[in-house]
Length: 354
Ligand code: PEP
Ligand code: MN
Image: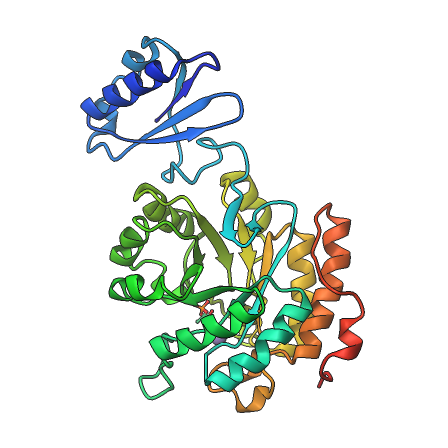
């Protein structure tokens, strides 16, 4: 249920409504829009037993609306305007700019991230990625460098004015990671780690929430709802391919989520064509398609020597390939009324393509 206040509602009337819904057993979530305030009422154990008309009569209330979908705070009904997330250093996700995130799958050494950071920056990316805690399918695969790796990534990114995104696998890592990262990533395999999601609801940094390997769109939004319900509405959804019967690619990139999520939620949506395709050479057209279909950003992996990468070698782009992805993305962003800051012509000057 959500309570829409009238544009003329006074601060006292809003406070009074919040107090009343708390008395009734709801947790209130306030959203101050351009014209009016909306109060989302969630967390009631038996919502059907509550008569919404009692709130309609309170001073300053314009209307009471039941949200029919199971995700509430992440729904368009609750917040009709797009959420634009300020990730720091002027980087806004969900606004007119298409945001590019790039970096190695895994942080492998200080030299590696120091070498990649200027190329990521030059290509026009605003956020540098790199995993320090890796959710590997096999326990014998490289598990990541942990905190030391995060320090290397943070230092390399900071030297070039880039923000940092990295995956958090366990709630015990959150406090430590906040010293090094600007955006915490929840990996596909952890999309329904509910204790982790609850804990991420308590922090004040953006969360990049990747779609689970077999998660429906509704399940993705309910995972986002866990974070929003905890008090953190800075959630960036990320389509990264789902597992289907198709074996030609690592996963199947489901771009149908873009127009649907645009209708269903106010949260920004990113596309990661790398983990979807698992094949470097087909990433550029998929990135273009994602932007054409309305993605708020694209995340890709980049490596100076993809064959030697300690994880995901098949899907790592060379820096020159990254630059050409960005050049194309700029053109498409413009066609869709967005923009992407990049230096044109860099694809000719950066490292060779394969
Ligand atoms: C990643 O981005 O490093 C990653 C492991 O992706 P996913 O969780 O989508 O598999
Ligand atoms: Mn990877």
